[in-house]
Image (cartoon, rainbow, N blue to C red; front, side, top):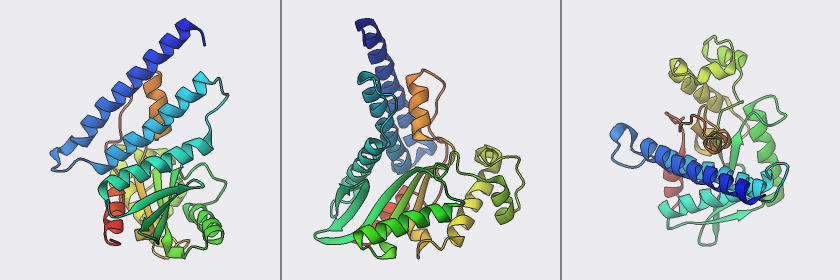
Length: 250
């Protein structure tokens, strides 16, 4: 990278981080909540992971981002985020998973999934089931020890399936993420979780963040100087519920 291009890249990256900080502050304080929005804080951290990875890709002249490195760093950041709020627990990243312990007792293993649309499986249940079987066998885990956090539903929504579960008729899955279908989307997510049999207690094991904004896409928009925004709503169950669930283990 030449000196001029390096200077341009450094400025683009600095602007991206600055814009992300501003967007995060706006999102955290939205609705005048008494407590900062946990979901916004975590989503911002996940977006930073993609910004850092793109910086590494550009500086090292790599063809693409490393999904393995993104996964490792993402789980490290989630562990740091949870450790700040749950000082009685310890968090360790192993093979792209976050192991949660109280002293020497394993309480759970958390898997962050960027989105549910990137896997060659016919349904959310099948995707979660594939992960569950893989990790139970590899680490000899009990089925209820697995926790999943889905960062975004971008590329993950099927209009026909949504209609079958909720009766809402949309022309494409993406339409479900628009403000007009906000309640319908949450209802759809709830019914999907309710019907899931890949894990024994889906309401305690599967959590969500954004409906439409993907942290990778947001990072790209910020770097390119495009119009960008943090999610304006958070799906449930979400990060607050994860924290509450783990608090009960203390």
